[in-house]
Amino acid sequence: MKYHYPQEKQIMKTNLQHSAALQDQPLQILDCLLPRKTVEKLSGLSRATIYRLIKAGKFPRPLSIGTGSVRWRQSDVIAWQQSLVITAEMQP
Image 1 (cartoon, one colour):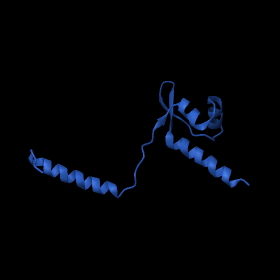
Image 2 (cartoon, helix red, strand yellow):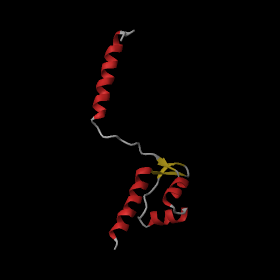
Image 3 (spheres, helix red, strand yellow):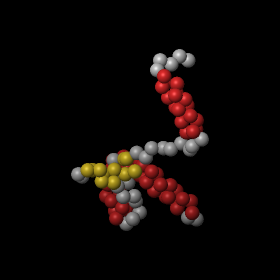
């Protein structure tokens, strides 16, 4: 391979080393922020029920991202869903 700039070879070598190091690490999934409508669809709950469960401490709290705007971490909603599955499996 022909390099046009002297530092290209070093950059390529560094990138390859970095890529090799990343292969040894577990894949990290980005945590998305979900709007209320999406949370309603994912959970199957209405807006009122979501806020009632939040008040009771049984649903994850949203993050405030601006005036009148909230979002939920996708990981929090997934963890809530998984807790329901675990609870359902534990009951006789």
